[in-house]
Length: 255
Image (cartoon, rainbow, N blue to C red; front, side, top):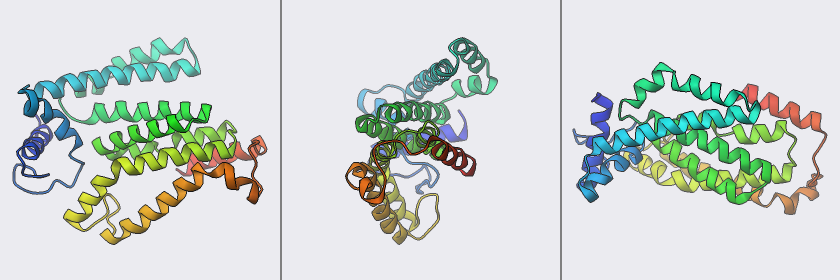
Protein backbone atom coordinates (compact mmCIF):
# COMPACT_ATOMS: atom_id res chain seq x y z
CA UNK A 1 0.00 0.00 0.00
CA UNK A 2 1.38 3.38 -1.00
CA UNK A 3 1.10 6.55 1.11
CA UNK A 4 -1.58 7.80 -1.29
CA UNK A 5 -3.59 4.60 -0.86
CA UNK A 6 -3.43 4.97 2.92
CA UNK A 7 -4.50 8.61 2.58
CA UNK A 8 -7.62 7.66 0.60
CA UNK A 9 -8.56 4.90 3.05
CA UNK A 10 -8.11 7.25 5.99
CA UNK A 11 -10.28 9.95 4.45
CA UNK A 12 -13.00 7.43 3.62
CA UNK A 13 -12.94 5.93 7.10
CA UNK A 14 -13.24 9.35 8.75
CA UNK A 15 -16.03 10.32 6.39
CA UNK A 16 -18.19 7.31 7.25
CA UNK A 17 -17.31 7.63 10.94
CA UNK A 18 -18.92 11.06 10.98
CA UNK A 19 -15.70 13.05 11.29
CA UNK A 20 -16.18 14.86 7.99
CA UNK A 21 -13.68 15.25 5.17
CA UNK A 22 -10.44 14.84 7.13
CA UNK A 23 -7.33 12.72 6.80
CA UNK A 24 -5.88 10.52 9.55
CA UNK A 25 -4.22 13.57 11.10
CA UNK A 26 -7.51 15.48 11.32
CA UNK A 27 -6.63 17.93 8.54
CA UNK A 28 -8.71 18.84 5.50
CA UNK A 29 -7.17 17.17 2.40
CA UNK A 30 -6.79 19.87 -0.27
CA UNK A 31 -5.65 17.74 -3.22
CA UNK A 32 -8.70 15.89 -4.55
CA UNK A 33 -12.36 15.65 -3.65
CA UNK A 34 -13.40 12.84 -1.26
CA UNK A 35 -15.35 11.01 -3.98
CA UNK A 36 -12.80 8.23 -4.49
CA UNK A 37 -12.16 7.71 -0.75
CA UNK A 38 -15.92 7.54 -0.16
CA UNK A 39 -16.38 5.10 -3.03
CA UNK A 40 -13.78 2.61 -1.81
CA UNK A 41 -14.84 2.88 1.84
CA UNK A 42 -18.60 2.57 1.22
CA UNK A 43 -18.57 -1.24 0.71
CA UNK A 44 -16.97 -1.66 4.15
CA UNK A 45 -19.31 0.82 5.85
CA UNK A 46 -22.39 -0.82 4.34
CA UNK A 47 -21.48 -4.50 3.88
CA UNK A 48 -18.15 -4.96 5.70
CA UNK A 49 -16.30 -5.66 2.44
CA UNK A 50 -12.58 -4.95 2.71
CA UNK A 51 -12.07 -1.47 1.19
CA UNK A 52 -8.71 -2.45 -0.31
CA UNK A 53 -10.44 -5.31 -2.14
CA UNK A 54 -13.14 -2.98 -3.43
CA UNK A 55 -10.50 -0.53 -4.61
CA UNK A 56 -8.42 -3.22 -6.33
CA UNK A 57 -11.43 -4.64 -8.18
CA UNK A 58 -12.54 -1.17 -9.26
CA UNK A 59 -9.06 -0.26 -10.50
CA UNK A 60 -8.81 -3.46 -12.56
CA UNK A 61 -12.25 -2.81 -14.10
CA UNK A 62 -11.18 0.76 -14.85
CA UNK A 63 -8.01 -0.53 -16.53
CA UNK A 64 -10.05 -2.84 -18.73
CA UNK A 65 -12.33 0.08 -19.58
CA UNK A 66 -9.32 2.18 -20.61
CA UNK A 67 -8.18 -0.61 -22.94
CA UNK A 68 -11.68 -1.03 -24.39
CA UNK A 69 -12.15 2.71 -24.93
CA UNK A 70 -8.72 2.94 -26.54
CA UNK A 71 -9.79 0.24 -28.99
CA UNK A 72 -13.10 2.03 -29.63
CA UNK A 73 -11.43 5.36 -30.43
CA UNK A 74 -8.97 3.61 -32.73
CA UNK A 75 -11.79 1.70 -34.45
CA UNK A 76 -13.60 4.95 -35.24
CA UNK A 77 -10.49 6.14 -37.05
CA UNK A 78 -9.28 2.91 -38.69
CA UNK A 79 -11.21 -0.26 -37.74
CA UNK A 80 -8.20 -2.49 -38.28
CA UNK A 81 -6.26 -0.43 -35.72
CA UNK A 82 -8.57 -1.33 -32.84
CA UNK A 83 -6.89 -4.60 -31.93
CA UNK A 84 -3.40 -3.12 -32.23
CA UNK A 85 -4.35 -0.14 -30.07
CA UNK A 86 -5.85 -2.39 -27.39
CA UNK A 87 -2.81 -4.66 -27.41
CA UNK A 88 -0.47 -1.69 -27.18
CA UNK A 89 -2.36 -0.25 -24.21
CA UNK A 90 -2.50 -3.67 -22.52
CA UNK A 91 1.26 -3.98 -22.88
CA UNK A 92 1.95 -0.47 -21.57
CA UNK A 93 4.02 -1.06 -18.39
CA UNK A 94 2.71 1.95 -16.47
CA UNK A 95 -0.90 0.85 -16.96
CA UNK A 96 -0.07 -2.57 -15.52
CA UNK A 97 1.73 -0.92 -12.60
CA UNK A 98 -1.30 1.25 -11.84
CA UNK A 99 -3.68 -1.70 -12.21
CA UNK A 100 -1.89 -3.53 -9.39
CA UNK A 101 -2.51 -0.65 -7.01
CA UNK A 102 -5.61 0.94 -5.54
CA UNK A 103 -5.08 4.54 -6.60
CA UNK A 104 -7.43 6.82 -8.47
CA UNK A 105 -5.48 7.26 -11.73
CA UNK A 106 -7.11 4.50 -13.78
CA UNK A 107 -10.68 5.27 -12.61
CA UNK A 108 -10.07 8.92 -13.46
CA UNK A 109 -8.68 7.93 -16.88
CA UNK A 110 -11.61 5.64 -17.66
CA UNK A 111 -14.17 8.26 -16.66
CA UNK A 112 -12.37 10.94 -18.66
CA UNK A 113 -12.27 8.79 -21.79
CA UNK A 114 -15.95 7.91 -21.30
CA UNK A 115 -16.73 11.63 -21.07
CA UNK A 116 -15.00 12.24 -24.39
CA UNK A 117 -16.89 9.33 -26.00
CA UNK A 118 -20.26 10.58 -24.71
CA UNK A 119 -19.40 14.14 -25.62
CA UNK A 120 -18.53 13.18 -29.19
CA UNK A 121 -21.78 11.22 -29.49
CA UNK A 122 -23.71 14.24 -28.19
CA UNK A 123 -22.02 16.51 -30.72
CA UNK A 124 -22.68 14.14 -33.62
CA UNK A 125 -26.37 13.74 -32.75
CA UNK A 126 -27.01 17.20 -31.33
CA UNK A 127 -28.46 15.48 -28.25
CA UNK A 128 -28.92 17.50 -25.08
CA UNK A 129 -29.63 14.28 -23.16
CA UNK A 130 -26.27 12.82 -24.14
CA UNK A 131 -24.68 16.17 -23.36
CA UNK A 132 -26.07 16.05 -19.82
CA UNK A 133 -24.80 12.48 -19.44
CA UNK A 134 -21.39 13.61 -20.67
CA UNK A 135 -21.38 16.54 -18.24
CA UNK A 136 -22.22 14.31 -15.28
CA UNK A 137 -19.53 11.85 -16.34
CA UNK A 138 -17.06 14.71 -16.56
CA UNK A 139 -18.07 15.83 -13.07
CA UNK A 140 -17.33 12.34 -11.71
CA UNK A 141 -13.99 12.24 -13.52
CA UNK A 142 -13.04 15.69 -12.25
CA UNK A 143 -14.02 14.82 -8.68
CA UNK A 144 -11.87 11.70 -8.81
CA UNK A 145 -8.89 13.60 -10.25
CA UNK A 146 -9.00 17.06 -11.79
CA UNK A 147 -6.75 16.07 -14.70
CA UNK A 148 -10.05 15.55 -16.55
CA UNK A 149 -10.15 19.32 -17.04
CA UNK A 150 -7.53 18.95 -19.78
CA UNK A 151 -10.09 17.10 -21.90
CA UNK A 152 -13.12 19.33 -21.19
CA UNK A 153 -13.33 21.11 -24.58
CA UNK A 154 -12.37 18.12 -26.74
CA UNK A 155 -15.90 17.23 -27.98
CA UNK A 156 -16.68 20.87 -28.77
CA UNK A 157 -13.41 21.43 -30.63
CA UNK A 158 -14.11 18.27 -32.63
CA UNK A 159 -17.56 19.67 -33.42
CA UNK A 160 -16.00 22.82 -34.82
CA UNK A 161 -13.55 20.83 -36.94
CA UNK A 162 -16.46 18.74 -38.27
CA UNK A 163 -18.46 21.91 -39.02
CA UNK A 164 -21.39 21.00 -36.78
CA UNK A 165 -24.14 23.70 -36.85
CA UNK A 166 -23.25 26.26 -34.22
CA UNK A 167 -26.70 26.31 -32.63
CA UNK A 168 -26.57 22.53 -32.19
CA UNK A 169 -23.06 22.78 -30.80
CA UNK A 170 -24.22 25.53 -28.44
CA UNK A 171 -26.99 23.34 -27.03
CA UNK A 172 -24.58 20.48 -26.44
CA UNK A 173 -22.03 22.80 -24.82
CA UNK A 174 -24.73 24.27 -22.59
CA UNK A 175 -25.89 20.82 -21.48
CA UNK A 176 -22.36 19.66 -20.71
CA UNK A 177 -21.48 22.83 -18.82
CA UNK A 178 -24.66 22.93 -16.72
CA UNK A 179 -24.44 19.24 -15.76
CA UNK A 180 -20.74 19.53 -14.94
CA UNK A 181 -21.35 22.59 -12.76
CA UNK A 182 -24.17 20.91 -10.86
CA UNK A 183 -22.10 17.75 -10.36
CA UNK A 184 -18.99 19.52 -9.04
CA UNK A 185 -20.58 22.45 -7.19
CA UNK A 186 -20.59 20.77 -3.76
CA UNK A 187 -16.83 20.25 -3.81
CA UNK A 188 -16.09 23.84 -4.83
CA UNK A 189 -18.37 25.09 -2.05
CA UNK A 190 -16.84 22.77 0.55
CA UNK A 191 -13.31 23.73 -0.51
CA UNK A 192 -14.14 27.43 -0.32
CA UNK A 193 -15.66 26.99 3.13
CA UNK A 194 -12.64 25.11 4.44
CA UNK A 195 -9.77 27.06 2.89
CA UNK A 196 -11.32 30.33 1.71
CA UNK A 197 -10.09 29.73 -1.85
CA UNK A 198 -11.46 28.57 -5.21
CA UNK A 199 -10.29 25.02 -5.90
CA UNK A 200 -7.27 24.87 -8.21
CA UNK A 201 -7.56 28.57 -9.08
CA UNK A 202 -6.28 29.87 -5.77
CA UNK A 203 -8.54 32.92 -6.04
CA UNK A 204 -10.44 34.20 -2.97
CA UNK A 205 -13.63 32.31 -2.17
CA UNK A 206 -15.89 35.23 -3.17
CA UNK A 207 -14.77 34.76 -6.80
CA UNK A 208 -16.80 31.53 -6.80
CA UNK A 209 -20.04 33.55 -6.96
CA UNK A 210 -19.24 35.47 -10.19
CA UNK A 211 -17.82 32.29 -11.73
CA UNK A 212 -21.04 30.41 -10.98
CA UNK A 213 -23.21 33.23 -12.37
CA UNK A 214 -21.09 33.43 -15.52
CA UNK A 215 -21.14 29.66 -16.01
CA UNK A 216 -24.91 29.43 -15.58
CA UNK A 217 -25.39 32.32 -18.01
CA UNK A 218 -23.19 30.61 -20.61
CA UNK A 219 -25.02 27.32 -20.16
CA UNK A 220 -28.44 28.97 -20.59
CA UNK A 221 -27.19 30.88 -23.64
CA UNK A 222 -26.01 27.64 -25.21
CA UNK A 223 -29.18 25.70 -24.42
CA UNK A 224 -31.35 28.47 -25.89
CA UNK A 225 -29.11 29.16 -28.89
CA UNK A 226 -31.83 28.15 -31.33
CA UNK A 227 -34.07 30.94 -30.07
CA UNK A 228 -31.69 33.87 -30.21
CA UNK A 229 -29.08 32.86 -32.83
CA UNK A 230 -31.04 34.23 -35.80
CA UNK A 231 -31.17 37.64 -34.14
CA UNK A 232 -27.39 37.98 -34.28
CA UNK A 233 -27.00 36.54 -37.77
CA UNK A 234 -26.51 32.88 -36.91
CA UNK A 235 -28.81 30.26 -38.41
CA UNK A 236 -29.21 26.55 -37.91
CA UNK A 237 -27.22 26.00 -41.09
CA UNK A 238 -23.46 25.58 -40.85
CA UNK A 239 -21.32 28.64 -41.53
CA UNK A 240 -18.59 28.18 -44.18
CA UNK A 241 -16.80 24.97 -43.33
CA UNK A 242 -13.30 26.36 -43.73
CA UNK A 243 -13.96 29.11 -41.19
CA UNK A 244 -15.35 26.73 -38.59
CA UNK A 245 -12.62 24.14 -39.15
CA UNK A 246 -9.90 26.76 -38.79
CA UNK A 247 -11.52 27.97 -35.58
CA UNK A 248 -11.54 24.41 -34.28
CA UNK A 249 -7.88 23.79 -35.09
CA UNK A 250 -6.77 27.16 -33.72
CA UNK A 251 -8.76 26.51 -30.56
CA UNK A 252 -7.11 23.11 -30.23
CA UNK A 253 -3.62 24.56 -30.55
CA UNK A 254 -4.36 27.35 -28.06
CA UNK A 255 -5.88 24.93 -25.54
